[in-house]
Image (cartoon, rainbow, N blue to C red; front, side, top):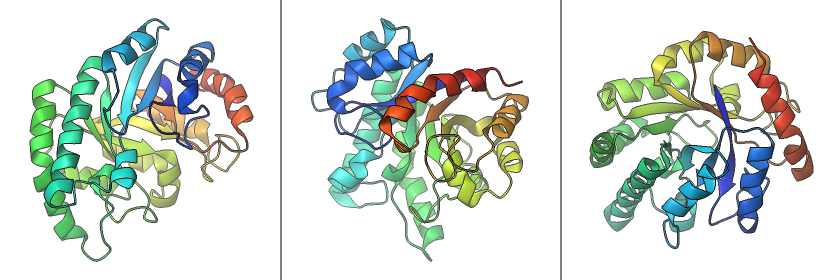
Length: 271
């Protein structure tokens, strides 16, 4: 099992304890805190030198876990559930993410960039999404890059709230493509997955990445989530990919910076 933290390249995000202007410091912090890699937040590729990012990570001995892609949905109003130019832009952006992932040796997250969906219209929208995803999946398959569909709670999106719903979509609507995995976020799962152990079992080998945040989306240990139980279950299930922080900078940015390394060391030591 490996661990990563979010580093943003263009726009500040509440999920990183460092601003865009502190990019170099963020990478140094990851290294000094004992992380294995960075979860890189990229909205678009204007001015982004992916090979430089790879070099910046390499010289610190860091890998890249995944590319976080959701900022573009809000900033540009694009998604894979849109039509016309907004859809074409979203599809092309996902292909750009795949290209970047092939350089960085990482995966690509598909969270809110898939679209928010509409209550009562879920089945039709799943069919639309499956159709709009096909060229992206074929591109990812050719590039040998994994795209990870994230299960997100019902208050943020109408589609794929639980682990089981995400598994069903990949299997039934997408036909179980090899390039498709699942990102399981413990904060969202606290709302949607009644039993964490069953959620891990139902995802099986599709589970390729885990986001860490406590039940209140604060730093782990400041809510009610039993991380030790979850980590032990993940290890027992054979999970060996990345767990990555995606918590708010609460109780404070300073605390997140100070306590992250110790928490990673604690997780590593769990049997």
